Amino acid sequence: MYICDTMKRILIVLFVLVILPQISFSQKRFAPAIRLGLAATQVDGDTYAGYNKVGPVIGATLMGKINAKWSAQFEIDYIQKGSRHNADIDKGDYSFYLMRLNYIEVPLLFQYHQKKFRFDMGPSLAYLFGAREFDYSGEVQNQFDFKPTDLCANIGFSYTLINNLSVNWRFSYSLLPIRQFPTYSGLWYDRNVQKNNLFVFSLTYQFNKKEADEKK
Image (tube, rainbow, N blue to C red; front, side):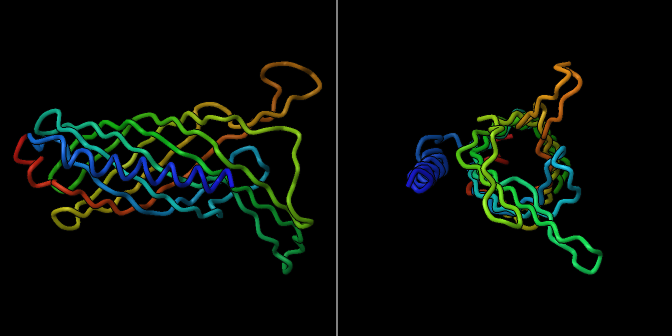
């Protein structure tokens, strides 16, 4: 029930973020957009390697022009991070592991425009509203909780396919641990920490891109 209520709030916020700029910004310098994609994720520190977990990305953005070459973009996204390890019986590996981390993430990106390309970089802050882990015996109840927030660094680029539609690639990495396991030594450097590590591939549709470009 809690997750359903949270998803309702997400949809309301995304709707407001897309619709309100269409009504309010008569100067058309701001370009709202919707974003849909997939995240290929792993968690550094979970003893497994590989971007084997795929999760959805749904969001809304608001881009404002700074000058002819630079802009700033605010986003609010639902994104599922985590990790996955599938058993490989042929190699004698019978282990299975799945981590699902549901976040509401708010990136603030600075963008450099070069013809049809746009290069992005900036921080993001994510709020964790759901976390579950599974192994071969079912759901795992872990005594070490995940931290409620995830501070990330982001870098990526976009390519405009047609006037209002672009394809986006982004790399994101946690700046702080999302979970920490203390060791017996108690030393600050002798700790097993976990961090989100992911690539995001998405499509973005911008509603009033033409008008915003005319206001450069």
